[in-house]
Image (cartoon, rainbow, N blue to C red; front, side, top):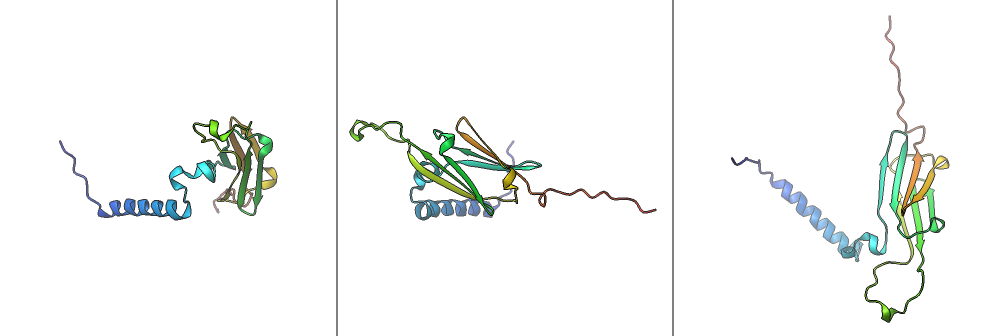
Length: 149
């Protein structure tokens, strides 16, 4: 038996608008958009919060830990990394060259206030994990309610 679904004309308009926004952003804001942000200008990262911490995980394959710089200025987190080429091969001997070498950087705004002095940074299997404890002002406070007699 066929199921009836309510037609919502604005659902298609929203997806069309999102597609146009993405097209314009890739064409003008990021001219290399067809290759994706990770190819030339950036790297992928995840950011989430736990009860007590803000956690940032960044994919930095092929980067040595000593070639990673992390800084926080106000609420702006900046991660810089450098990938060095192992050995030089003449250009005419390449069939395909997709791995990138050089310095790249990414800055993101931290969504909550954190205690930078107690931050931890770990690097394992190409993933940088930054753990920022939440500032005391951000942690929820529990107020116990007493009955008045």
